Structures are given as structure tokens and as C-alpha cells.
Length: 472
Image (cartoon, rainbow, N blue to C red; front, side, top):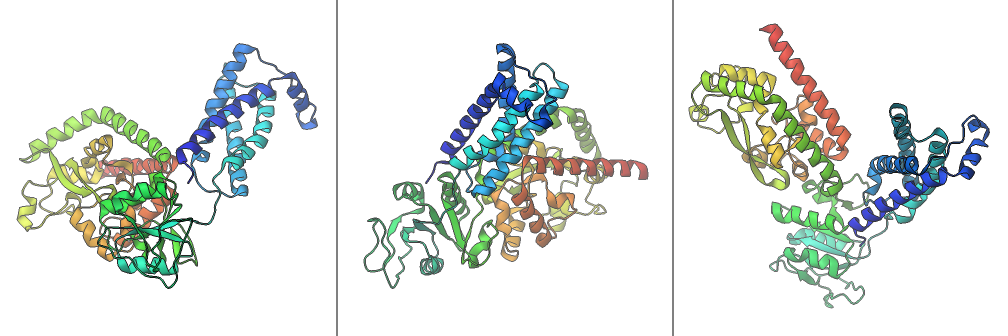
């Protein structure tokens, strides 16, 4: 197993050194003459920078390049042509950013000849560098079965083309038998054809390291949420591929694949590189929103209190990432005894705008989405994200889970204030459509994709406020 952290360190440090070296080389008279000797570039003037200027140019170029090359730092198996293509595109984008900086900021710009020479050098070196350190797609050599369902364990044991070294499961799960034993490198395999028990689920971390496992076959039918997601997170941490049988793929988020009985689980939601950027955006957005909306929050709180007796905020338990729960807050938009009037638990957004339990202020808050401002607190403390699948009530979540395939896939990421389903007008009352949008978001998520969704949601909010003002 290759350490993901080691790959990231090598990728970042190596990229920084290559970029710095490229600027130094491009700043030499020889490099400048070679560039200007090419007919299309003969109009460029040679420009060799002094020490202080050169250091400033190196710092600017390294910072820009490290930011643009960000996707290449993820330890993902890539084929040679895919890696070369991605690296070349990123080098071109680096050049575009540096050119833009040079246009607006003359103090830190690279001379045009130096910039061209740097890009030509990086266009050759960086693709080769990332190809040399990349993680190569390869076939599995050592696998374990992880889970607690005997039938799925038996199915995986019988159908796996990979040598199975043993079983990681509760001790109550009996080993299954196979017509012929599988052995590998002296690892303890039951000679009678049974599957060796390597330890309980709590020992998965140790088992993966001790036996140098590269593939984990998941055998959960109705998994305990903590054990299930804990196993997936452990696999991601150690760079282990997690696979499931195609017949039992509804519990996880799987990569697109066709033909094979075993399919790969998409473990990307555990990538801390993406998480760090997303978390920084969440904190910055929530803090900025709280500061900008402070006067609005005060006015809404006063209006809710004056409109009807009761608390200003409404709280309810919702399902969080990994199937856990948390408390979500909203401005109260219904009378305080709304649930006792019907005898059932109801979410504030479940009541229609004409429902008599909705207050006058509540109707305005719902229509303008301002009732959801307190949820920024959940974003700030990390229970929610700005963008993600909307959190459902646990009882509704459990009910939908039994009727909608792939519903558990939503648990792979934090719930959000808004998401693909929300900007397309799909609610929890349309679970089949909602899960399609949620999975689409999980597969495509990125900082820029989140930003596009936020802009669309803000546009909808402004449109709703304008429409309300014009019709009132």
C-alpha cells in the first residue's frame, strides 16, 4: 500500500522545486536566446531579471502553480496518457493565470520571454514528473472480506478472482468453506478450506497494515452505520480499494463500472484535500453571512416574537453524515403547538403556505427562505456544509431508506443548506428524484461546483423576495 500522505508531500515539494527551477533556467541568457530564436517568438525581447526581481518572480510563479496543480496532488490511480493530459492542461492554465497577473500587476510579473520559456520547460517536465510518481492502476493481490453477513461473505468468497487472505468480522460470524484452499505468502489460511478469522471490525486498521492488504471486499447487508462508514474511512486512510458485490451495491456510492461482479466503492468523500477546501469555504461563508445579516437577524427575531407567543427558534433532529444525527435550527414559522394540533411530528417546511398553523411572519420567512438563516450556525460548527444533500428527519430518512435504492449514498457527505435538488425545486416528498440529484452532486462535487450552486440559490432567493414585494 502506498501512503496517500507521502504521495501528496512528494507531489507538492517536487512541483515547487521544478517550478522554481524552471523560472531560474528561463531567466538565463541561453534560455532567452533559444526562445527568441524560434520564428514565431522572434519579436520577444530578452529580459534577464536581477536577484530581487528573480526571487519575487519565483515566489509568484510557485504559488500560482501549486494552486493550479491542486487536483494532481490527490493520490488517485491514473493511466499514463490521463496523467500527461491533466498535467499539460494545468500547465497551460498556470500560464494563463501568470499572464493575467502580469497584465494587472507589473511589480510581480514575469517578462514575456521568461514566461514562455518557463511554460515550455514545465510543459515537458511536469507531465513526466507526475507520471513517474503516479499511482498505477493495478490488479488486486491481497484481499480481505470485511462485514458481518454470512451469505454475502460466502458470495464474495466464491466469486472473488483475488486471493482472500481472511475475514475481518465479529467472532460470531462463522467461517465459510471453499472447495479448494487459497494460500498466499504464508498468511494464515485454514487448511480445511475455511476462511481464516483475522480479527473483529475494530482490528481492521491493524489487519490492513499487518498483511499489506490492497483490497477490502465489503459484506454488509444492513450495516451498523458507525461500523459501515468506519470500515470505509479506514480503507481510504490506508489507500485500500473497497469493493462490493454488484447485487449489494445499494449501500454504498459505487464507481461506474460494467460487467464485473465486484465493483469499486467511491471513497473520494474522505479525501482530506477536498474536505479542507470545502471546510474553509463553509467557515468563510457562514461568518461573512452572519456579519452581513446581523441586522436582518435582529429584525426577524423581533418580528417572530411579536407575531405570536413562543420561542424565536425552532429546533429539530436531522440525519447528518454517516447516518449520525444533529440538531438543526430555524426561525419559528408556525405556532408553538402545531404538532399537538395534529398529533404527529411535522417539519416546518412540510406545512404548506396556506396551513393555518403557519404564522403571518412565517409565511414571509418561508417564501424568502430567511427562516433558514440560523442553520448557518450548524455550518459554522461543522454539522452541515453550505452545499450538500438537505438533511431529513431520522424517521423519514429511515422510511425512505427502505424504499429507495442508493439512499444511503447521501450519508457519504455532510448535509447542506442547499444542493442540486433544492435549486431544481425537488423536495423530500420526491425521494426518487431527490436521490438522483444528490448522487449527481456527490459525484461532481468540487469547490467551483459548490460555488455555482450557491450563486444559483442566492439568485432564486433574490428573485423570490422581489416577486413577493411586487405582489404585496
